[in-house]
Length: 400
Ligand SMILES: Cc1ncc(COP(=O)(O)O)c(C=O)c1O
Image (cartoon, rainbow, N blue to C red; front, side, top):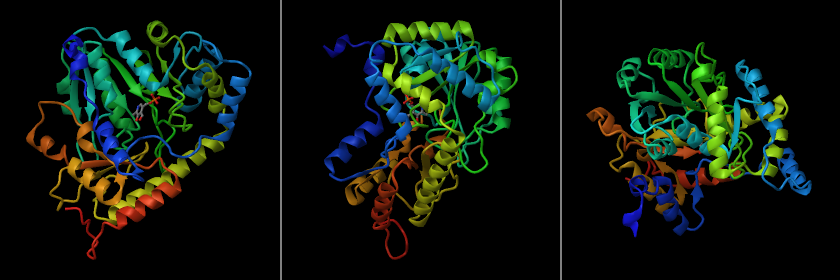
């Protein structure tokens, strides 16, 4: 009966994260630095609001217009962008659905969509489901810089859209204003749309500030912004997100969302009102806490011999290069770490795409591991003890 599957479904396989999670499950007590969600409690004020919404019987299909108002206010305050909350915002089930509905709203069979490589895994699937063709532009390691020439060469008469994720999973890169201007210039020249994924908008470090591509002059009308509550409020399971776009596009996204899921979870939409109205202190503490987790993990990895050439400037991840003396691939090293230390990370290969890569690009695809640091101090401390236990007297990892 598998023959009856659609041709796209036949190409979908479980991701490296899922495959290694199976191995980690078999290794009891494994510490999971693979998955990009917190293992610590969500903020009490946000949880209380959800409990109260359930008790108030917000338990049926629901569209909470006040949530669109909050999202519009946030965009004005953070990015200086004006959106009409009654027409320009579609509430969806997480960024994941907001992104999928956005792609279904704008992509036709054969349309090309530019993405940066490495990239978060779900974009490509959505583009293929819509009949689109992903076209990858590789970012240059170790700082994952954008090369304007490479970007410009990727455009053709069939290019319909570009996807931008900043702060970036898996590298922790935050695209600079200059890079955003290059992207905006290309989008304008080729008259294409941009779909952004800004789920880590509040998780930036040191003096780094997230800038939405939509805030670059000329871009608001051609950008669909997607984001969610998931990462900022440690509620990835609540499935509340949104797409923001000009009225006609937002309306198409809303129509698709209604046909696929009807509405996002009602009590969590209500609780989102409280979450998005959190005081500035909440967002400051969030950044400070994540910055110290980042520093802890970067220091740990440097101590055990991973050359961290690029300190993440945002998101929850360190994309660490394998030690040059390591003869294992990323997948083999992760398997060894699970078996010998009971610590799970994600091999970088799953974030790299594109079939027409140069030989230098091919050679670094298996040389990165992603560590998620959105974990409690206890989890990070135990992970540090276990990873440090793998180091020999010369301070080198004993895994290879
Ligand atoms: C870059 C990026 N976008 C989107 C998501 C998923 O967001 P949501 O929970 O809002 O669907 C993740 C989760 O790991 C992510 O890393």
